[in-house]
Length: 194
Image (cartoon, rainbow, N blue to C red; front, side, top):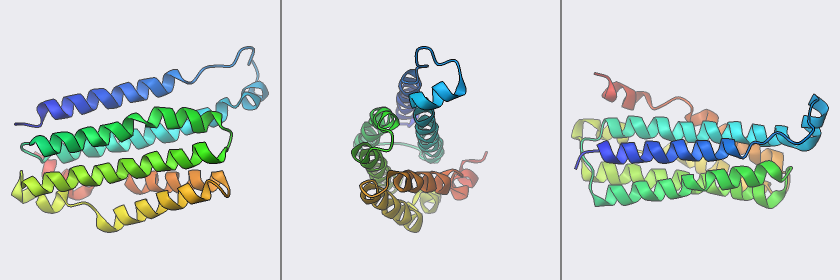
């Protein structure tokens, strides 16, 4: 089967996740000054939202590129994609929890854990696509970045552990991973070009 339905479904899920996250941002009652907004904790929620939005955007962008060079999918790829969407669907929950936790340890650790598992699910999806050999010429571009992926997993694991020591360092670990993946894989972009 083609990738059309898989891509459309995934796009819809990610759009809904972003919408759910933004609906959690509510202006506190009576907050008419910057100091009132700062004291309400809204800035922490907004910064967490921005980071989560960027992370979901990275997944959406890279998902689009990966499926653009994939000619067909099978049941294993469909289930691997659902596995990825499951972990991404927890991003709004983790974002809300860490945003309202004001540097609380457990929410910060869960936030990093959700992204660790999302990264693992991405790796499983990419490996299933490579395994199917859907487009032999694109296989080198679809192979997971072993080094970049390993560094990402190590940063997430460090973020989980450091959340119990000093939560802002955990947030910095997640941000570092986002910065690493911000630019899509150039090899896939070359394969996807008309």
